Structure formats: structure tokens, C-alpha cells
Length: 520
Ligand code: FSO
Ligand code: SF4
Image (cartoon, rainbow, N blue to C red; front, side, top):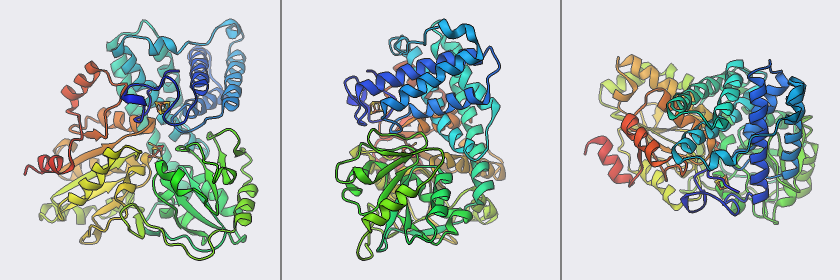
């Protein structure tokens, strides 16, 4: 196997024997075969009008091969069969074609491999968002077309660096389109998020923990669990769901369980409730809770019960009733000991208060904005983000999003006027909100985003973070600090290019970086 698509890759170079994420070598090889099959379907789709089914297969296929999504070989094999069938249905003569061999990418020269990885991992990240939007009825032909164009480029052994570079930037552009589409899908379906304080206490009685990003799965679960006496708690990236009016209207949506994805094996150990995974990041479940974990949509793990597209969550509800939950209310905390967290500071809330914010900046009440966001992970170096937020001066605001916020979202670092100093804008795809706010501020101050008193301190883990980083580069945003380590798939020359053009740099030490930013 060869896989280096995420931040925890073995030795910071590549997983070659088994995945640090728990992926077996056989699964990695089947995933590569599937990507090779998607390449051929994409090539045919670029020449023969694709159907909605071919677009769906490519979208879901890109997503399913992402980190911590699907570990089930049988499921991935059936996806390969489906891709072959669709290709032949589009163009019968392609029946004799072989799938593309992904080793040709992994064994290519390191700069071509690096740019192709940025494109491939970027479209895997975009595809995740595209799938969440698609289940709400929102699709975009330009985006689906780009997946095919990008897959063909990844497989092109003749393509030059000069042709690959614009495609890397186009990946960022298409991700912006996709995040906008998902924002529209979520807000038109569930309303505009509003700020909310979410308890971390688990009330006594049966409960279900729902993890991942898919708001539709949560809505269906809330609907089906009505009247059963089962409480629902969000986990990980599902936390921002509490801000959406149509979701928070359900009284059984009580709070949030635990922290970020990488703590699940510890936090779910012996949990007396059911757990439903709607997207990444699932880790191999331990025996102490394996019998109560369910998957749905693209997520899969061998031996777990999978809820199919009919979305009948009866088995999950019954498991929660059977386990019975805690006997008394159980007070849990965030990683810094806080008992509640807040969320719901999406673009509408902030932009509705734009005048107040602009005045506060002009009057020197707010001196600087930090966007401290991205993915969490297991590396000890990720304490950097906690230390950074703790050290931010009282006249600064910390905007955050994605699962990296669990490093500090239970801290009480005070407020500035009507605003808490930490404002959670949502899931990783809500980077769209941060971009909208940054562009509006730049407009108000008649300057570019790079001239704003705004610094981006990002953490990355998997492919959605790659897509978001490419969006920021596509927008010309400079001086991003990225950690806890730089991607293994960024070659020395590609890094040199990124440093020269975007002044991107690794995080070093919280206090030092903060002093550099504030010029102290
Ligand atoms: Fe985190 Fe996992 Fe949103 Fe990612 S839960 S790491 S970028 O899949 O999704 O931030
Ligand atoms: Fe390794 Fe990450 Fe790939 Fe898993 S997804 S095999 S941890 S590089």
C-alpha cells in the first residue's frame, strides 16, 4: 500500500504497511483500484454526456476514499463494480479498457506527484461537501464536471507542471463554489444559524450520540426519535447543528457529547448509549462499544450495522433504549474543564453586526482577529492551538470552525462588547462563513484581505482541510500559519512555490508566533 493523504501518515512520509488510521493494506489497495476505476469513468464522462448516476458515483467515490470514512473492503469492491457498469453504459466500447493504475501517480517524480496529490486530495475533500449538499437536493454541474477533468489530469502521465499548477488553484475555486452550495443547502433547509450555548452534560436516560457533518441524517434521527424518550447529543463536527432553528426546535436535542474525533475510542469506551456516524472521522471501534456503533451514508466499518439510504434509524433508537443511558445526569467537560460550549456564529450573525464590529475596530476596541480553525488530531503538537488562544490579548477576537476548536472552545476568555471573544462559525465547510466575513471587512475598510488585522492559524488533518487551504490560496490569502506539520505530499519545490507566492509557513511556538503577528 501507499497512502500519504493525511497529517498522521506514518513517520511523516507515508503509510506503506498499514494505516496509522487503522486502514489495512488490503483496503488501501482496493481504494486505489476504486480511484483507478473512477479515473476511467471520468475519462469516458469527459467525452460522452454523463448521467446523474455517473456524477453521483464519482462524487461519492471520491468521498468514500477519504481518511476515516470507509474501512469496508466489500463495500468498496461493490463501488468498483458500479463504476464499471456505469462506464460501459455511457460508452459500450470502454468495456475492454483497463482501469488506471494509481501506482503511476505514487511512483511519478516527486513534484508531479505533489501537485497531483493536492488536486486529488482536494477533490476528495470537496466531494464530501458535495455529497452533503446533494442529499438536500443541491448539486452543481460545473463542480461535477471539474471532478472528471481533475481525475483525468491526475492520470495524465504527459501533463506538465505548468498545466498542473492552474488546476491546483482551480481546485480551490471549485471548493469555494461547493462550500457556498452547501451553505445555501443547509441554511435554506434548516434556517440561518444563531448563537447558542450547548451543555456538555449528559442527562440520565437513553441517548444517541450522532457524529459527523450530515445535518440531514440528524434531522431524520430527530424526527424518528420523537416520543421515544431518547435524547440526542451531537459529537465532533455535528456540534454546530445546535445553531440551526429547524434542528434546535427538537426538545430531545440536548447537548454535545465529548470532544473531537480522535478522542472517540476513549470517550465512547463503555458508553451506555448508541452512536451513529454520518461521515468521517470514524476510528476502528473498541470491543467495549463496538456493538452500539452504527454507520450510514458513505461511512462504513466491517461488522458494524449500516443504515442504508432508506434511513430507518429504528435499530439505533432500539439500541439506545436497550442500553438505558446513565442512571443520573452525568456532567462532562471540554478538554480545559469547561461545562458548556457555544456555536452558531455563522456569517449572517456576524455580518448583521458588521457596523458594531467595524466601529469597534476603528475605535481600537478590537485590535486583531484570529481565525484559529481546522481539524484536530492526536499529535501532541496540537496543544499549540490551545496555548495560542489562551495567550491572545483581551482586545482580540478568535473566530473558529471545524473540529480543531475542541482544543479551546470550552475556555472562557471573556467578551468584547456584545461578542464573546471566541466565536464558533461552524463545521469545516463553514470556512465559507469566515471567507464571507473577511471579504466584507476588507470591503468596509477598503483594503485587501491581506491588509486586514486578521491572521489565519490553521490546523489540518485530512482532505477537506486540503480543499479549504486551496480555496484560501485561490483567493490570494497570504501569511497562513499551518500546523501541526506540513503535508507529506508537498514536495520541496512545491513548498518553495507556496512560500514564495503565499508566504505560507509552519506554526512554531504559540507565544512566539503571536508576538510576531502582533509585532511585539
Ligand atoms: Fe474534523 Fe474529521 Fe471537519 Fe475533517 S471531524 S477532521 S477536515 O473530517 O471534517 O474538521
Ligand atoms: Fe495513513 Fe492517513 Fe492514509 Fe490512513 S489516511 S493510511 S493514516 S496516510
